[in-house]
Length: 151
Image (cartoon, rainbow, N blue to C red; front, side, top):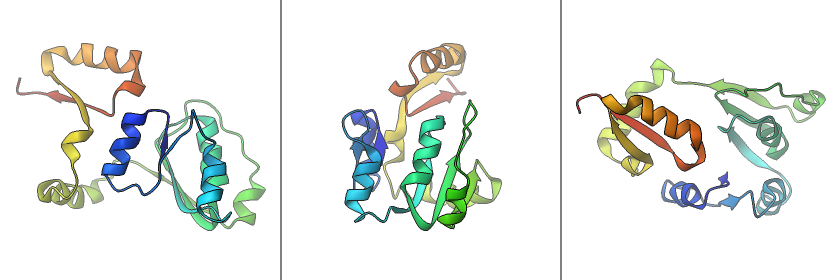
């Protein structure tokens, strides 16, 4: 797992990441190559939405690997598309799909992972606007914001 926030990297380790890298201190691609003997990772999941992280996912994945884009980039992303073919990549997008909800709900109920730790802050419904403004002002500070509609 890579991030620029040490707290989020610690969370990633608690959730099972075997290796973490703070990309403000170390080069992610160099670290991936070092850890994989130059092969690259089998699956790269991009969830940041920056053009450079979209490209990094393709560079970091191994031949015949899979790149999963969660969400989308807010700016155009340019690639050397020949790399997709040469590496025989499987590239797909992911979103909140209804078909996965039952398995996610089951996992939450079984508490296999410390999911509550992902919630950075809970806001009452009346403060929804403040929650969005706080997240928009400093998105790195938040992992997940929960709006409590009962409060």
